[in-house]
Amino acid sequence: MPSTRSLEHAKLSVVAPCYNEQAGLPEFVREVKAVCVQLGCAYEIVLVNDGSRDDTLGVALGLAFADPTVRVVNLLRNFGHQAAATAGLDLATGDVVVLIDADLQDPPGIIPQMIAKWEQGADVVYAQRRTRDGESAAKVLTARLFYQLLKRMTKTDIPRDTGDFRLMDRRIVDVLRQMRERHRFIRGMVSWVGGTQVPVVYDRKPRFAGETKYPYRKMISFALDAFTSFSVVPLRLVTYLALLIILVAFVASVTVFIVRLINPDYFIPGFPAMMLTIIFFGGVQLLALGVIGEYIGRMYESVKSRPIYVVEGIYESGKAGRVGVSEVARTPERT
Image 1 (tube, rainbow, N blue to C red):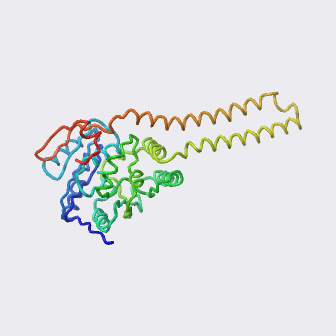
Image 2: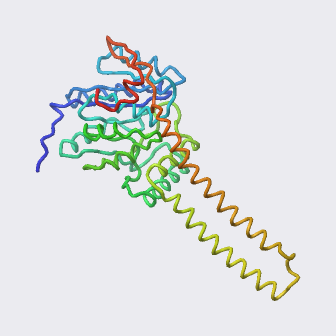
Image 3: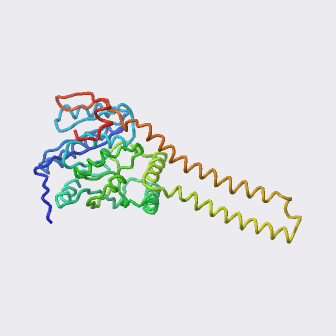
């Protein structure tokens, strides 16, 4: 059945989390506006300032007050990229929503291709990287390893070589707004929702300005959120590892027994058995506690029911207002 969707009668929201992006933000908005004007549709650009330490907020406010299509959501502090993206999705009013970073590594120029696939019936159009210019070989390698592990460890089909750059139909966004888990992995959450999801392949560019907001420490934390949010395999691995270590301990015990038969004076009496017991079973217990602790820690964070983010204010041309937590951070209903 052919799709009846058309951007002519719909509104486009472009959501961009921003952290220390003062140098490149004007160029980002200029490129996004050029694409939206080319599309000839009603649109808004939602800039979410995630507690930036530079003058990102000042630059964003200047853009918003000069242009009625730009809205600025200012978070009270830095809550992290995924929380900032969530704030933008919560406050976007469009029938079609594009989530994109403001560093111009993900080119706004492919948004028309995404729109074309949406008009053909796709619910989600995700941008899939063909190349990753400007990134080190180590980062490319770790990213590839991450997606391979994620594919093996989760039941949700999360496309490889993708980020959060994607177009979503309003009904997908509305479902995401009902998912209020604290440790968020948005690309996995979108895949979990389902619907018709198709790729647009592109070449990722180097950053326009500034430096990466995902050093290795944050990448590891992000990977842990992804694995623990969509897989219980780490918990099962503890069981498998325990069985393996029991087998190794059994083989080692047989080896020690045979050595003692051949040369009774080779070992100090009782020493091999004691060391094997301490090393193997101590390692299993520590590993099990560590993995279980990761899950319990996330459960602890969730049951406190704190908001994912706190909004200081929402600013746009001719308007400026402060919105409380109860109105924005906790309420998933569409504004």
